[in-house]
View (cartoon, rainbow, N blue to C red):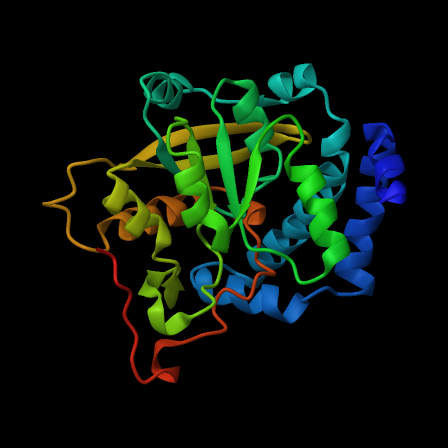
Length: 290
């Protein structure tokens, strides 16, 4: 832990120098998950040339390396720095709802640098419970909790969400979910087409929104340049939900996410084994969304 805290205090020009070296090593030496990345890109963008695919992959490794060093740097970032480097162009769309006493569901994805966003939201008067999947390694779990709680976000393990909903029921806030992860139980996932492939999605965000009558927004994260980000809020759905077909929230999330990935393909986490499950692998699939 001491090593990472010292590393966090290094200036950005040194950290980005480390990132450049790390990117080269991941791409050319270790070849980190290269086969997974290239297969994902080729199947997701059948219309692109091999040259385009290789260029996107190269950009992905640069983004991944920057993400690593920027995440390590987060505990040393000041409020002034984050407010300057993370912008919310339509911030009033969310902040007005929270100030009116509403809690909303924020669905995001593994795009650009998602780790800085919760702290920047808190600094913009938008409290957030960041829902995450716990790590199996206790050291790195403790480290990530330290990083993710910097400046006030409330990191919440997925299995603790029901209890957290009771404890913090009177606090208007964002319940943030990174919703492009692979479901732990694919049989209970919501399945739909995503980037030309049959894909399972966590049903939890839709169930939560419908049961609590929360509005749902997509947090579209774009890297402007190194260390500068822009997050645009896009309405996915809002109550009443009686006339919205089951699965409608996930389908809208899928549509917006896919558009965002196509606009900035190198910024998505292509090393993520998003398609390691397929529907025919299971006798019965189907999520309960009500």
